[in-house]
Length: 230
Picture 1 (tube, one colour):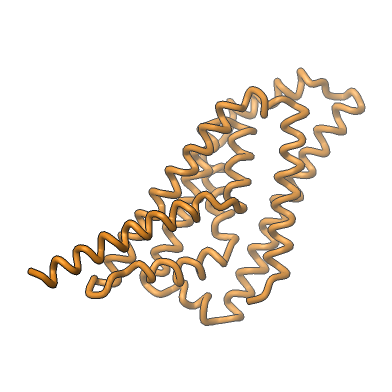
Picture 2: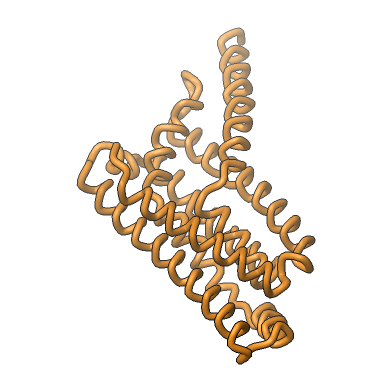
C-alpha cells in the first residue's frame, strides 16, 4: 500500500510539473503561432481553429513517434535531422515569401488605383466566406511537421515526466494527449482574441502590414532553421 501510495504521489507530481511546462511551451511563439494568427485574421475564427487542429495533429504525431521511439531517429541521426531540417526550412521560407508576395500585390494594387480599400475589404469578406477547412488544416499540419526540432523536443521532453515504476509506453501516450489538449486550449484562446480584434486587424492597411510581418517572420524562422546546427 505504501509503495502504491508513493507511486501515485510521484505520478501526481509529474503531472503537475508536466502541465506547467507544457503551458509555458504552448505560450512560446513560433511558426505555428504566426500561421494560426494569420489565418484567423485573413479568414476568421473557423479558419484559425481548423489551422490549430492541423497543428495539434502534428503535435500528437510527434508525441506518438516519441512514444514508439521513432523520433529518437532524429535525435540520433545527424543525416536524418539535417534532411528534415532543410526541407522544413524550405517550407517555412516558401510560406513566408508567398505571404510577402500577397501583401505586396495588395499594396501595389491599391497604390496604382486598380484596387480600392472597399474592394480589398470585399475580397477579404469573400475570402472569409469561401475559406477551406482542409486548406487551413493542411497548413497547420505542414507547418508543424516542417519543424524537426519538435520531434527532437518530444523525445527529450516527454520521457522526463514518466515516473519510476510507471509503464513507459502508456504514460508517454497519455502525456502526448495531455500535451495536445493544453496546446489546443492555448491556441483556441489566441484564435478567439484575434477574432475579437478582427474588425481592427482586418482593415486593409493593417492586414497588409500584418501579412508583411508574418511573411518576414516565417522567412526569418526558415533561414534560422536552415542555418542552425546542433
